[in-house]
Image (cartoon, rainbow, N blue to C red; front, side, top):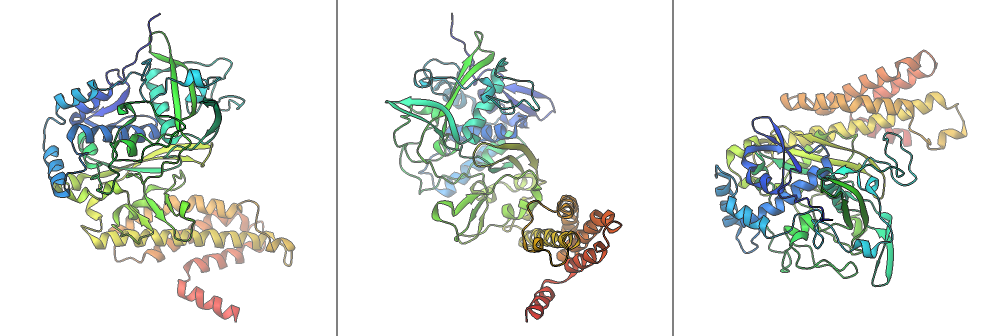
Length: 520
C-alpha cells in the first residue's frame, strides 16, 4: 500500500482570519505568501497558536535574512522598516525556495515534520491517539467531559493532530511516558516542555505580516557562533543520549527546545491520524530566555530558580500584566518585559500607534495537570510605554500595584473576620491556619477583581483620583455585599465586618502606627 502523505506546507492546516473577515485554512507556505492579506491566526487552541507564531517567526527570520548575526543594529532596524513598507508582503520566490528545501510532510518515512521516525524500533508500545489529543481521557483516566475511551479510540483530522503535536512540543508534561530504548538504555521519564505553564505575549500588528516582523527581536551578538538550525533544517536526526548543541537564535530558541518525541500514524489517505508514539526526546536541559515571556528575577531564590517566566493563571486578568509590558526596566529590575518588545520603538510611528498585544496562556502545573487555556487581547498600548509617555506608564504601574495591595488586604481582613465570627473565644483553633479558604475570602476575592478592572480603566481616565482610595472603596463594597447574609445569622458578624471595612479604608502609615502602639 502507498505511504500516507500530508504536506503541511501545502495542505490546509492553519486557520487564519483575512482582512475581509472570512476564515480559511492554509498551509505554512501560503500563510507566509498571503501574510499581508491576513489579519490574524484563527487557531481555536491558544497554546497551538503560541507555537505556530514561534514557528512562523523563525521562518520569517530566514526568508527576510533578518537572522544574520553579523548585521548591525541600525542596519537590521532599517531593513525591517523597509520590509514593513512592502505592499505585497514577503518575496514569493524566497518563500518558495525556503519551503522547497525541506520536508514538511507529517508522514514522510525518513524525516516526518517535527517527528522522530525511529520511535517504532525504540518504543515497545504506542501512546495512542487519545494521549496525543489534549482534552481526551487516556489510559485509566475517567471520561468526565469526553466520550473518548482507549477501547475505541477515534481518529483525529491531520490538521488537528498537527496542532496537538505542537502543543506537546512546547507545553508537554513531565514525568512517566512510554519507555524508549536507545543503545540499550531504556528510559521512561520526560522533561516538561519549554513553555509549560507559561504566559506568552506577542505584538499584534494590523496584518499577520506586520505581526511577524514586529515580533522579531534583533539577534544578540552574544549568541553562540554555532550554526543555527530549526528541527526540520537539521542535517541529521539528533542523538537522544548526546549533549545537544547550544541554543541559538532564532531556530533553536524558537523551535528546537522540545523535550518530547512524537510520531504520528496516519490513515491510508493521510487525512486522519489513527495512532501515535509519544515519549521523551532528550534528557538534556536547554535553558534559554524565550523572547515572548515576562521574566522575574528573585535574588533570594537558588541560582537554578532565580530567573523564572511569569506563569499563566486563568484567574488573573490581563490588565494586571500591563505595567510589566510598558515599563522598560533595567538590568537590576525584578521584572523584565519580553525581549521581543525591546525593538518595538524602532518600528514606524503609524504601526506603533496601532500595535496591540495578543496573550496566550495555558494554566498548568509543572508536571502533568492541565487546567485550562485562554487568550486575550489588549487595546493599542504602545503610546503608553515608558519611552513614549513616562507619566502614563507610571500611572498604570501605580494603579496596578494599589489594586494588588488592596486585593491582598481584602484577602487578609475577610479571612480574619470569618475566623473571628466562627471561632469561639479562647479556642485552640484560633491559632491554627485554616485548611481551606474561608467562604467570605473566596467570595470577596471572586467579586473584587472583575470590579477592580473597571476601577483601573476609570482611573486611567482620571489621573487626579487617588488609586488606593478608589480600590479600597470597591473592596469595602464587595466585602459588605458578600458578607451581608451572614449578619442575620451570626451575632458577631456585624462588628467583625465593620472592623474589616475600617482596615481597608485606613491609610498604610496609620495601620503601621496602630500596630506599633498595640505591640508596645
